[in-house]
Image 1 (cartoon, helix red, strand yellow):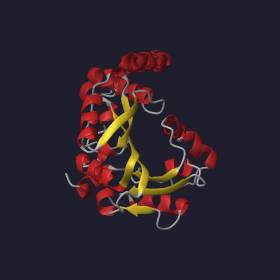
Image 2 (spheres, rainbow, N blue to C red; image 1 turned 135 degrees about the vertical axis):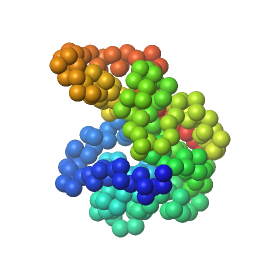
Image 3 (tube, helix red, strand yellow; image 1 turned 90 degrees about the vertical axis):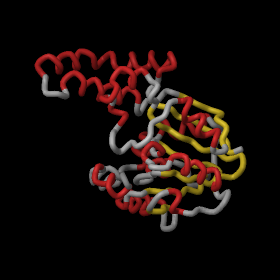
Length: 250
């Protein structure tokens, strides 16, 4: 389907919040992402967030250290991000449509956005063009080689069909990055924000999503205290449900 056809599958509030959250809340909600930047040794420069939504990730970065730009296809999210970051900082449309200058950025991020595109390869080729040599692209996507994907199959909540158009394993994502001019230098399968949440939602749907709540709901409630510890264990065993990689432009 085209972007226009798929747009009806996004609720009105998908792109951002109508109520402006506090800076403290923004920094807390984005702490996993900002910590990953720090662990990659990325402390400042010019950054572009693809699929930036209302710009929460960019708003969590210190403007003294970062020149912050975004790309967002949703008009509501783009407006919210522009209001926070300033006019000219956020392009409404796709990365390819934005036509950024060659080697304009030190960092480009795809936080849970590459899987939403119809052209993931072309988006990474465009990213390589606009990144400085030695710059970093960060990509976060669901891991279809994870225990959750194998356990739940088509009922896995992280598939998020039809909004997610492509899915990746660590091997396929690493191969695609290598083919488009990048070398992965950091990878994790842990995500405090996504992994346990996806397991919880998938298990709930599996146990009583079809309306069988008499048995399913008690079973789900009994499982709740074990969801996060079990997911931590499986992630430690290399089965985490989210891939986050940092790759250098070579």
